[in-house]
Length: 255
Image 1 (cartoon, rainbow, N blue to C red):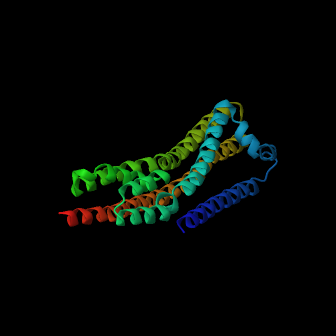
Image 2 (cartoon, rainbow, N blue to C red):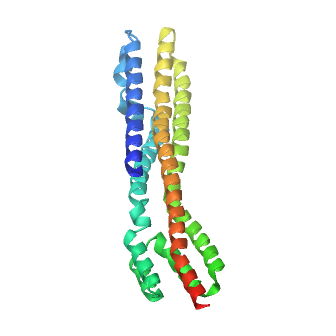
Image 3 (spheres, rainbow, N blue to C red):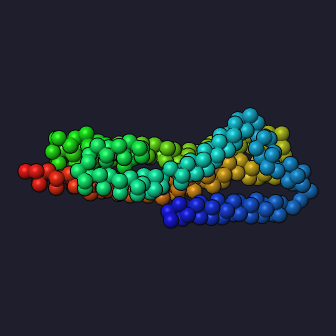
């Protein structure tokens, strides 16, 4: 369910922002209707915006595109990785529960080794401390759960990085574009000066717009996936504690 919601939200966000950008760009083209601006409008296409601003501007655009690709790849990776059936396999839970109910700890360990996942890793930590007492087992489980949460969030945290860095890359591109725009006014005069300045600034602002288009879904996806992953890890820890209780009852019966 979370997977579908995240995909829908990201798709809607990307579509809405792209449509808004296209509308803004179209309005800008319609609003500039004069013989002095005709040549500028013909050359202010996407290729010209990306490659016509000099090597520094092109490098910034390449970094923005790389951030966009990384954002999409990280979202897909998180949606594949952060899934309940991968973190808490039902067959593993039932297998360990059945083995522990029968008092067969070796079979429970074999089930964990046959199904490597965060749940089996935390269970193995609990089993390795079985002789230390129930309180020690709980502390070991809590520590192992924190470690697994950090492992799970390592790649997800890169989404936050993409969401933070893309607006800064966009702002950098805008600043570089405006520096070039003002520098290019030296050889212009009269009405052409205002036209050139307006067109150059409009072109420069596209890097900020694209950076924000990347940042919004990246940060939204990061928040949703992070919260879902945290909830799953808590559920893993609760499942481990519930399974370990069987060993606690077995110890009480022996006493």
